[in-house]
Image (cartoon, rainbow, N blue to C red; front, side):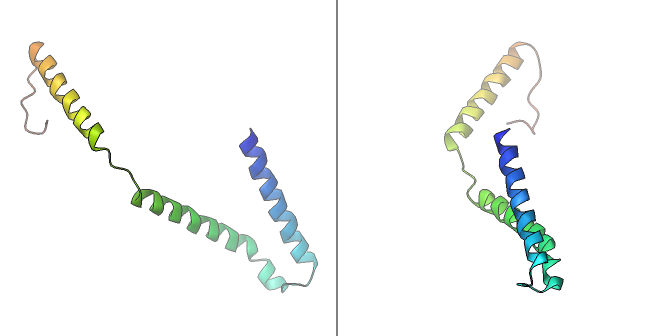
Length: 92
């Protein structure tokens, strides 16, 4: 619930700033009308950047890979004891 309040507060603050810029003549009116579009495009670019950074820093876990391989071997042995054929080439 707190996160929603923060987002709504930010949206209201940006809206008030935008309406204030529309009322004053600090920025030309033709540019002020495009500010929401610029904001959405900037937000999209920021999101793509964060996804890219997250993918570049994606951690590898060699210890977990070893544990997963042990679990696979254990599951194959268990299934063989139960009479299930797991000798297909697509399984590890």
